[in-house]
Length: 251
Length: 272
Image (cartoon, rainbow over the protein chains, first blue to last red):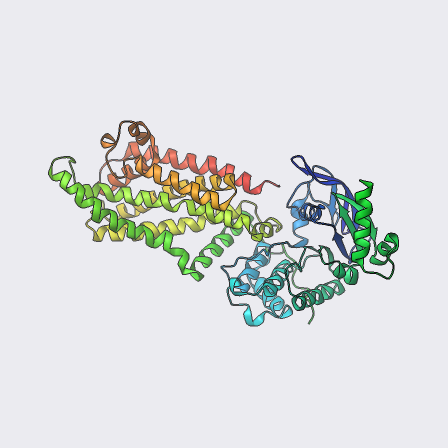
C-alpha cells in the first residue's frame, strides 16, 4: 500500500435487514492520516457502515477496501490493521483493566511480554495507571471509555474506527477523550468516527460525511458543509439540520 | 502525554492460532471465575448441596422401599451416579448463557474485530468449562464417598467416572451453546435451557431403573444419554463390564459435540 492509497474506500455499498434498507449505495473515501466524521440522524446507517468497514457485517452489494484490502475477501488482513471502539465497551467487566488489555493484545497477536509492556504504556497514556488492577465493573463511564480506546490501540492499528466514542460521557470526560484522539491523529493514526455531538465534528474532523436514509447526502469540510447549507458563521448543527431537511424534501 | 507507537501485532510465531487463542479465552474465563468467586456458587457449590439433600431425602425413602423389596440393590449406590450426571446436565446451560453474555456485550464485537481464531470463543469456553466439570466431578465423588458411595474399581474407577461426567457434561454444554445462540436472547435462553436439562435428568434412569418409570417415559429413558452416562458410572463403580452403555454413551457424546458444535461455531462466526 502506498501513501496515495486511501485508508478506506467504500463504493456502492448496500445493506438491508429484511424489508429495511440500512445502506442504499454509499460511496465514501477516507484519506490516510485524516480524522473523518460520519454524521447522521438515528437510523441513518452510520453504525451499519462502520460494522461493514470493521468486518463485523457483510454488505449485500458494493465494495469496501480498508488500507488496500477487501473487507469481504481479506477480513483477516483488515483485522490485523484496524482498532475498533464500538458503541458498547468491548471489555470484560469481570477482569481488571490490565487483564483486559493483555488479553486483547495477546489475541491481536502480541507476545505476552509485548502485551504487558504495551498495557503498562497505554494505562499511563490514558491516565489509568492507578486503577489498572481494579475490576472494570468498578470503573466510571469515562474510565471505561478510555480503557476501551486503550484496548483498541493495543496492536498499534493504522486505522481506528470509533462508533460514538463519546456518547454518554460527561463534558470533562469527552474533552479528555478528544485530547487523546487528537494526539493519535498527530501520531499519524487514521480515524473514522461516528458521533451525535456535531460540535465535536465541527472542531476536530478533517472531513465530514452526512448520511441520511442510508445515503450520503453531503460531504466536505465542516466549513464547506456550512457554506452549502447557507449557514456560514453558524454551527455545524444548523448546517446538519438544513442538509438533512433538504435530503428529506428530496426523498 | 504521548500515544506510544507500540509493537506491531501479528509478529508472534504462531504454530496453531486456534489452539493458542482457545487457551487465551479459556484462561480469561477461569480468571473471571477466580476474581468473581460468587460465580462459582452455581457450578461448584450447588451440586454438592443437591447431592447431600437428594441422598439424605431420597436415599432413606428408597431404602424403605428396598426393605419392602422394591429395589434389589443399595439405592444409595444406584442414586449417586444419577445425581452426578444430573448435576453435569444442570451445569451445562451455563456454557450457552456465558456465550450469550459475551455475544450481547461489546466484547463479542471486539473479538470479531481482532485477527484471532473465530472458533476460539466457543472452544475456549468449552475448555474452561471442562475444568469446571472436572472440579465438580471430583468434589461430587469426594462427598459421595463420605456419604457411603463405594467404588469397587478404586482410584482408576474414580478417574474413569469423573471422565464420564466431564465428557457427558461437555456434550450437553455444546448443545446448550448452539441452542443459546439460536435463541439469541439471554433472558429467554435462561428460562428455556434449564427446563430440558431438568427433563432429561428425570426421564432417565438417573433416579430409578427404567422399568420403574411411567410407561410413556420408558422408551425415552432407554435412549436418553443420561441413562447411558449413569449406567456407565454405575458399571465402573461396581467394577463390572460396561461395553454396551459405554459404546452408547460414546456415540451420544461424539454426536452431541460434533453436530451442535459445528452448528454453534457457524452461528457464532456468521457475519450479520
